[in-house]
Length: 470
Image 1 (tube, rainbow, N blue to C red):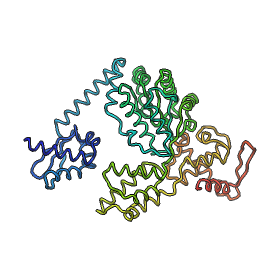
Image 2: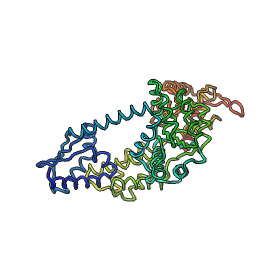
Image 3: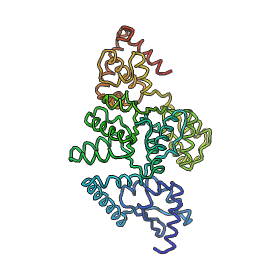
């Protein structure tokens, strides 16, 4: 390839990077593509079908625009498997496998290089892109404290809240920020599921020593979705020893969960006591101003100019979580692109009418169980527990029935949220309430701290639903 062609391709790559962002260009293009211009088409060489398919589905328009900007003529883009790129990727995989084998045989001298490699890769989210508001200010400040101090006064930092509110963003941001402030810090970022799977694999392969050395000798252990450990006794015991080892060495643990420690069903008392001994902080759904700021930032990241009235319209009508906000904005942008119309308030109303009608008003499962627990004189933790007293069983049945009626969650999802119950338990609970409702004169009774209470089933249900929909 002559020098002129190389310069043209370099210019095309620069424009692609500007269009999609440097981070995504680095991940998908920098070492994974080789571009050749022939006649009236551009051939993009890729190492495998997965990368080629992803680029074709997500970035082909940006490639065409960049080529036309430089060559001043439209060209067809085709994708081919490049043997040299394939061989290079295969060599990297083999080198990585060989390194893993060497590390497992001699973990004492290889633990630190492994963590350095992980740090260089960086996780996706950073604290600088986290939009702060009243609903998450305390969690953000706590994360900043972990970054600023090698060992905080609260250990662990336990962040909890509903899905899509920014827990993972904060955890990844902590890891990236710690690497910038203290480059020698070793960290491990895993999910509860990853920790469990690695522990089981270590047990099966007889490599518990390697597993324990890896997790117990890190400076910062960050575990997302720690509620995944619920009902797994052996894994919980291993995690407890891991936590104690890190805490004794004055190192930091950061955890995230959909529920606070005491509401995670079938979690050992020892783990619960460790979790609540630190800083437990909740992330609430974002307020209107924060939702506007999140949408504006997302629009800037996508290089889209969204009018303020449109931002405010989405923020006013979508209140559940950050993911739904971003998904709604993406839908609007796609609608605008397909209809070849500028984004205006009238277009937003037209594009999002059906979506908004299905998502508002919103009833959260946490709201349901809080109302039910308060009404029956128990705690949400009781609903999540395996206790089967009449009061708790009755409250649990009504909570599951209302969750099925007022949310779009499936039986398994409701069961998992309410203490990892089997989906069959949820089905039976819903049938029980339905049977009670068939007889209008049916009464139910339960015990409270002030004595026995008795009430008609339909009256009880109306009271609960009126409280939930307030």
